[in-house]
Length: 354
View 1 (tube, rainbow, N blue to C red):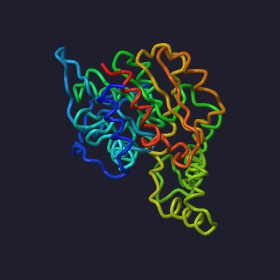
View 2 (view 1 turned 45 degrees about the vertical axis):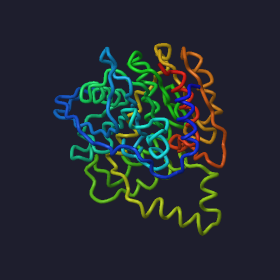
View 3 (view 1 turned 90 degrees about the vertical axis):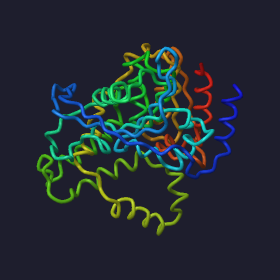
View 4 (view 1 turned 180 degrees about the horizontal axis):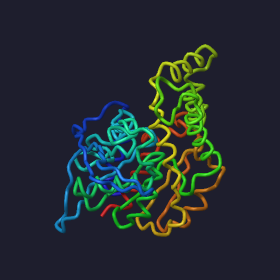
């Protein structure tokens, strides 16, 4: 490990779980005229929102050398990464992705955050976007709007991790390194696919759905959120948070009946958009070093399936890390806790340092 990388990692280990001193985030929008979707549909004006930290740096050949793309999970947004447990551990001075050294790009995907989405008014008339459309949108923000012609690192959590695999197959020469967190590089099938159908069917079979033109809350949204919660939560962490019947009931009430529900049209589109995901046939196309990280208590990507052990062998410079269950893991949500997997990011940055 170089002295620079070692120093950054030691600072990372010592950092408290508090907001780091990083440059103020900047938000922007990229309006694309007549965006064509893979379904053949077209949107006259697609707005893609994004957040950035830091500034791009180019070498003598005009190639950007410090850009980092980080992609969010289903239902999230780029600003979701600006939390003390994520940005506070990565983006501060001397930390692994120090935003005074790196240009951090946090896009809001199609259908998410402040980007164009069904709830803006079109509802079910909104184009039925796919993961491929979302990655195309990410690329256009990066390359066209921000003028970045190369990425130092591409990484993402959950859906963003799946997009990371797609970036590696669709734009193999565009990055130095890839780090998908909580994912599998195969078509979504089995229980994972059934979970998505539970969510979609709960919404569309609600008696008040009215093809997206519903009035008032949908009773079946509770069922959709029940299914999602059971797949993405951590039994160990929930028991620590609510070890008694009374505490568990109170946490349940807050989680499902006091929180503001997601828009049903947006939620349906978000979970349906994964229908085209399958980087498996193209894994040999990935050129950059790739480090896939999952946690053993992730019920969305359970390790007993053995998918990554099998498929990582097809990635020329690929490596797979399975984090064991521990007091700090959070099931599927471990993907957003760099205090757990940061040492692997440090290794990847060191190995791909030029």
